[in-house]
Length: 81
Image (cartoon, rainbow, N blue to C red; front, top):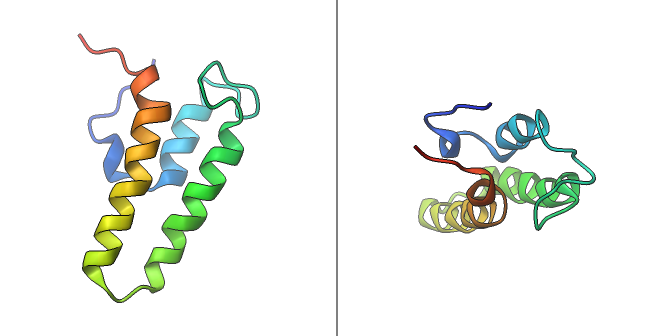
């Protein structure tokens, strides 16, 4: 069981490491079967944003990165009670 009150306040690498605790990184049971490949692109995109001085553009791109993580990885794993 993984409990996190603020999973989207973490970097993509932090989220990936949490998910790797209970999903096989290269053969997951999710729609995205290779999580390492999926998160590598997200981590690289996130790291590139550090050099961008345009705050509004950074905020928009971060939303795009996390939207895909939410939709393809977190949503299928989330059980709420």
